[in-house]
Image 1 (tube, one colour):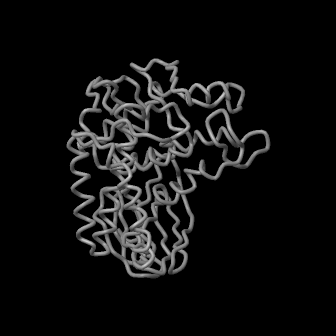
Image 2 (image 1 turned 90 degrees about the vertical axis):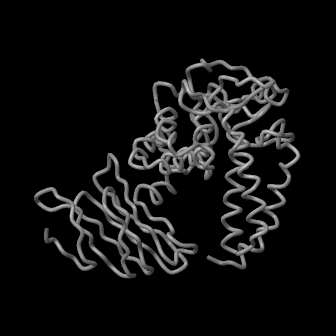
Image 3 (image 1 turned 120 degrees about the vertical axis):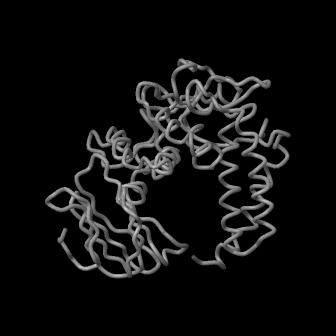
Length: 342
């Protein structure tokens, strides 16, 4: 919520976004972007006309426009929105109707079959994919029967492969999976974008199932999160995606207004029987406990409680108990004080 701090950063953000303008094709998407555009350690394809780099750029444009609007910088807002609309109009070239998601890239004006989780996820979180497709995309990119782990630089024995790395540097991309049917899973770091997409599609209750993959790191005495699936370092801060998402999407605590002057509480437990945790804000800690019967919220700021199949309700700062069901099993809404009446 610090407008002055955000305003200081805006020129730098705009310069980064403008750097990509020479690579925007007439169709609106990015083509033949030079330099190293790091997306993920997984085997994603960004050469040619890239859905992934385009999706990341579009998300940046949209978020820049949102911040510019918040700062009442209308010229910057319109500039970013106009560019974004050009991207959105051209992004359809990446859609694969048969498979229900977006491919990674187009080469020589031909859609290539390589498809990653991230291509679909970035299409959702950037807003480039029509909302009507979100559910189908999420179903596609979380279908474990289709997912495959691949990396351009990871070895088979848990090491960095110098041979594979050199091939990538030389522009040699060996497709050793069934690109027509399989989908390359995101590595732990960029899985945050996949989780964002799942939540944005209204399926946050599925996330606890996806978190289970991180259990593979908690072996041989390690209590840290590793860098990649099957290789890399044992301790990697970038890979701690679930530590954010458990709070934002499972416990469901996010800002409803900039700076947490108001918070949103939208728990989506999925397979879990209960969850509890706390989140620091500029105004103090927000604590939430939730189970099948009730939610307990203790917040220094007003909150919007957003429950499944219930209208959102606003509550003042303080401690609240919200009963979720009575002995009859019916959902009920209570006052901000403890109340178990039906």
